[in-house]
Length: 294
Length: 304
Image (cartoon, rainbow over all chains, first blue to last red; front, side, top):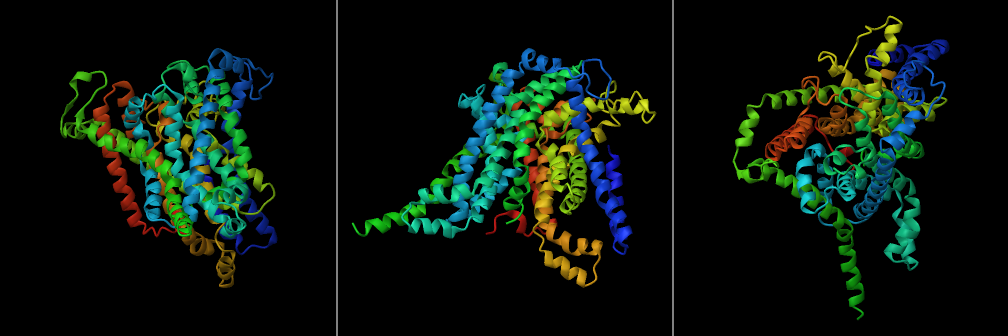
């Protein structure tokens, strides 16, 4: 797989050559510069996914490189036998609540940052950025103490709160970028027409913010769905556990049930793949509106 | 009455932004600032959950223990190597990947969706996939060995010599797409006329990349590498599940060491001391990096 790393510079050399190339050489240049590295990278990306599907779908003990005949025994094992049904429900619940809270607070704060020039705005913005340098994994001990104090250990709320706190700052910066892209005149004319600020926001701004809301909400959902360490740390009750921790349990100390691991992986991947397919076209747009450029 | 109306509206307008950010401020203070402050407090205590009666103020004992702790220095060294390798390679590959999918070609949308897809995949799922790939009995190396392309007994995760590149590649798989997305987003904002001007001046593809594209991307790259460095430093999911820090502690980074202290020995005092040290170190390195790279804040998203 690391062959990719050594091949890619070849594309650059290809790029240099093609500068003074004829039409035919330009086409070869394009092939070397574009499609060769892209193909190699696609291979690097897709082979792992294929490998997981292969193990999930072919019978245990089979060494065939095609998942044929297809079996669903591994899915039955993880879903009914290993508790993935429960984990899945918990994960959906937690990720959905995180999505709602992150999006809601990000909308409020993002709107404030984009539309008001208030004292302390810059400091608040700086504080949001600074949170990115707080080592999340190292907050486990102090957060555990706070949650214990509030009796939130072993509740799903602990994960929702922790996820919200860690995702909100970036989500808010992103969202304020999206709000800035909505012309302020639209809102003002609605207010001149007699709408209150809230009405104007709900009727005029919110519909135009849809791409931004989709992007921010999806990031929140995916982030929460994937989090492993918070669940491991704050939940002990297996009835409350989430998919990533469930996936971890298929990886035993000495023996690994590859079929179960792969099938569990597919179960864990399906929601994020669906969300990703939905949000993909907003992804680059979302990034450029917020965190990366002003 | 006639005065109260506009006056009330003005007060309301002045207070609205504060009301809007209040919930966030409360959340951040309660669940980030207060816990962060408590790290400093616990770091000066002997505090082991299993020994509740031994809690005591011990001053800097935890920190002097840290300086003599071999495992601490090992984990710090691993973290430094890990961050350098991941950020360096992700920047290089992410830049190339972004430049490629920024070109116009048939199937670009599909290519983007496919190469970016690992971004959505979690640490533990990445682990699961790479465990399958790396397994000596059924993995890719086993498959390659059937064509005589690899040693059949290759166990990349079990061998201290190969485990580092193996975990680095697994993390690259999901890390490069994210970097590429960030760079691509900024790449699309390079004004087209700059390239036209450059080509009129006789600049070729390479020169316009070096003199137009790179300078434009600079702030975005500085910020992205800094954020990535912090995130990769804190990355625990993948290493915890892929190797559990092994073999023989070869892949235990500092955050993983702290997590192990918290979960296995319940030593919150010493763990907090390590957390505090890591936080100060990260802050120091971040500021140093921003200074050295002469970051101007254009990419910060703060400007209007």
